[in-house]
Image 1 (cartoon, helix red, strand yellow):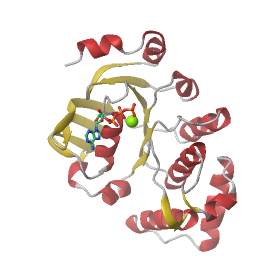
Image 2: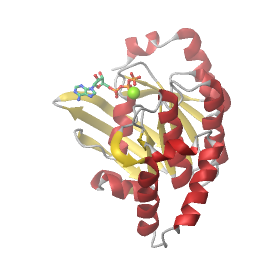
Image 3: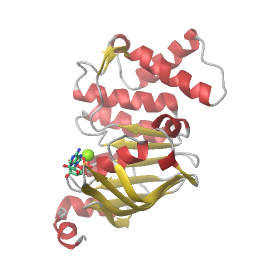
Image 4: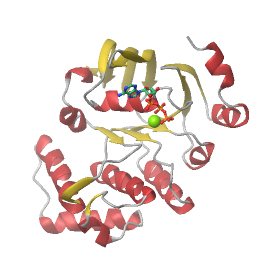
Length: 249
Ligand SMILES: Nc1ncnc2c1ncn2[C@@H]1O[C@H](COP(=O)(O)OP(=O)(O)OP(=O)(O)O)[C@@H](O)[C@H]1O
Ligand SMILES: [Mg+2]
């Protein structure tokens, strides 16, 4: 599904990703763990198409298509979704309006009819209810004044509504209370099937107890330096990253 080959990325002349290779297969839940500043968020931004980053080498293929040549909205329509580590506040745009615009754009790109206002409200209310999001929150400007955990739940609401083929969750577990953590994990587990894949960036083994990943990748200094199964997460919890920081190129 997602294939990243020899990716080199810099920002303002500073190299951040140094020949990163990563494959996530359809149906797979892959986790990335790694020290602060190793380039995890940078990787997620580059995949989703945020400006500012210069790809100097390498490619990112989604189902065999090089997405580096696509605009961010085209990537979204191709089925990519990123839940931000730091969700943006959008003053002046009601959350409901934002969600509607996102769903309508998706329907349009698929050549489908837009949902009727009634269908839309029903769909959003149901999904919000499952995530413990109060309907009153949906009337407020997107993320403005939302608590840390509320912002993260909102990211998962967007994911649940859009049903992306490939979802990247960048530290969506940070700042969540225990109930919300379970809800996020259930959201991922509910969409686990051969047509969907997830890339879950996290610092904590705790999330991976609820979302049992198929693979765990360790990232250090802009590269994937180790790939294995869930046992890696347990090992990191005990030993930390020292051995990777010493050895990585
Ligand atoms: N605009 C920028 N200018 C200069 N350096 C930057 C810029 N953006 C990111 N970096 C640097 O790139 C490196 C990787 O940052 P990134 O946010 O990808 O790390 P991360 O692995 O997500 O860390 P964390 O675990 O703390 O979220 C950091 O050293 C950061 O300071
Ligand atoms: Mg980060």
